[in-house]
Figure 1 (tube, rainbow, N blue to C red):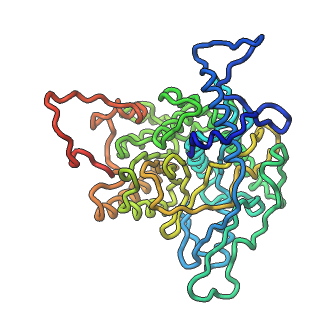
Figure 2 (figure 1 turned 90 degrees about the vertical axis):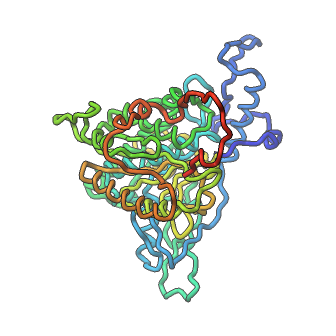
Figure 3 (figure 1 turned 30 degrees about the vertical axis):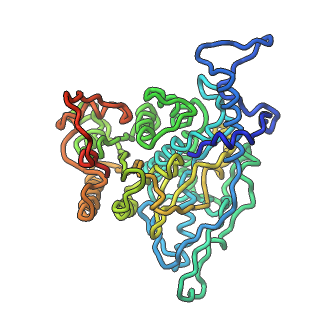
Length: 482
């Protein structure tokens, strides 16, 4: 998440931006003027804060409301991994298969012109909501796998607008005749931001089974609508963030985003067959996860009559000090190869991204830093184009912020056992190269290790340790960075 610098603010016009219908864009946390006098409520910001928030809001809407057309190059000689599927651009069919798979992922970005967030005058999350958007995307991927399966693809995936051209790099040796280029694939010349109130219609006839899956797809998208009633919308996530001391306009870290997602799923009746587990201290306790899968509310004894659930496992971690420790790159790659992996929320410092795969030493990601108009998902056949991105971006592993949260999905107990076995294999093999693994998978439950109370709190809360009677100088051995 990039914030505007003080030096940048002075170049922003103090005239308010307007909606397309002439309404004022918004005036964050502004006081209401009556009879020329200001309403002085203790919870309202002062005039300086009002002006600052207005300028920041206007600047962020302009800053993230457009994009530069660039090319993302892909090697034809190296495989591309996307949520456990592998593609090679030397094979012509793989080019189209990759694009269709990538475009089918749900893309959630900054939005503007939505209903005010409760208790504020915010009608956009531009400039501060990127981590929440990344958290939405990792949850959306889990829901797609849960309801539609990993192999599902959107029927209109190849007809979406392309914001960025994708161009496979030419190999050192001459390319064989007929090699594929992503630029050859069809794209509609439609501006995402011009007709947010348009309607959708399938580009080709769909079978009854495809129509049923398309209805589920649209339902999942509607759960992330920018409306107070949406169970996973920005309004709901901001509301849940208040319990951890966060409010609209604040920066959210990947760990706190994981806990907000967990609470959102817990309170969503539509997702009653799904649970979210957030690890503590980089440890996944198989007993605790198995309890969630069994559907039991009790801490130890499973309820035989409880409804079985699928589970999303989120593991917050820090892979280094100020920068990513390069010894973990190979392990991150191996985890992204797993079909049960649903991606990583992280990014660059103060700039959240959603990592979905990789090629060579570059991560593939979906970027929430694009401000789009509000879409009313309550309308029948609302447009879906702005919820899917046909422009994969790449970023070097070396630029990755060490603070991140990685996600996994298991449909049942058998799949959970498979996942734990795969994680143990990957983590143990990588441990040969570094002193500390990224995280651990262990038997039992957190309460057996005295961590039951800690697991019930947000990870951002601090634990006060007793002071030493005689303070001693800190040494490097006292601090362990993954």
